[in-house]
Image (tube, rainbow, N blue to C red; front, top):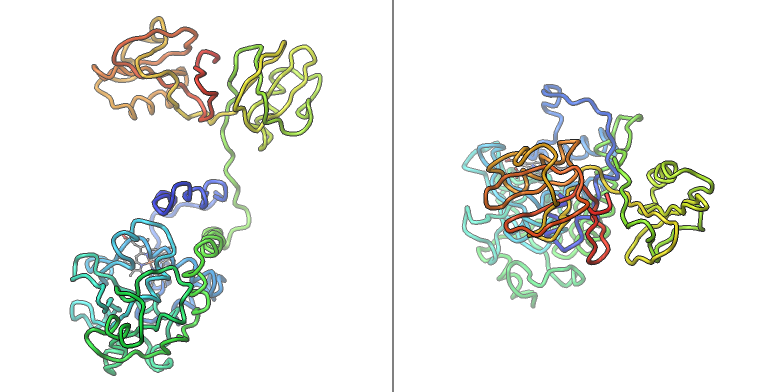
Length: 426
Ligand code: HEM
């Protein structure tokens, strides 16, 4: 989800940040026989959703609707579920965004029986923007559309009943009531007069079976809100996800970030700005190791500056520029397993590797070389010969040398001073 949220806009993946809200402590079950029949059957529409998400899980309609937005991603296949198609168009199906809600309101839908199976009924897109079957053929299930629409004033439970009654052949909405909705097109055409929109939304004729301007589904206000305001949906989605994944447990625990403190600047240099709190906020009269431990324990501390004369320890949240001072040491908090490019391509650590050339693998890719170094506690720097594809581990890198066909990574965090070669200071 974070990856596909990134497709919706650079940096948006971080909005979800599942890692910091993750709680562990559930037991993994390899089989789940008791789950049978406990997930909503799409044929049963919002009655089943109400039972599972509201009554069993305690989500309420807002958070239920928020969770269902995951259907922007992925698809249904006949061989899996008996249903077929995608909830969004090709572009949006790769983005974790609010298009599920926009789709629901700005397209028109007709009930169909899937592959003539009377037990599997769904709503296919039925306007001038629809593609031919198979090519990102768009659809909704009863359990999706019932959030926004009542079918025949509630008289029809879903697509099967609508088909039987020859109603809802064209379930659509007029656009003026949805003027703030983030969609340029309506039913695959321009927004326009009633006649124009009718032609776009109902090219094959038929009637709608809910109000054209004020549909009456159980969660219509929420669906409209999420369609209009993606940020509101993301906020509710996070709450819904947290609730759905922690329900029934009171003793789940957050992940602890495993970090190490590495010397970031040479002795005699410290960060110029980025100080958090007053000088010595992490301790005065402390030992170097205590200073590193204090920074490790403090979520705001990314860099620890240790003044060796006064033995005072100060936390910095960033270290964009350095300044030369007497008697200082500067450490950086880094994830213990991060491999970052430590030297410009074409440079490697001088001398021989710790064990032998190619000790971390021969014929390996860059990713395999980095992973091998992460897994090897002795390895602090990985050097890959990109011609021979040999990966070698170095325990230190105090001097460097220029060589053809090499790439060198250090076990480091992501922050760097411009033009600095951090591995020299390990
Ligand atoms: C009333 C509730 C729901 C019903 C009836 C329902 C039903 C379905 C069905 C029938 C499929 C197609 C499966 C296939 O043919 O492979 C599907 C796919 C999917 N559902 Fe749901 N779903 C519901 C809620 C949710 C929720 C709450 C989430 C996530 C939070 C979710 C995430 C997905 C995803 C990601 C896929 C795509 C899987 C793929 O592409 O392989 N669904 N759902």
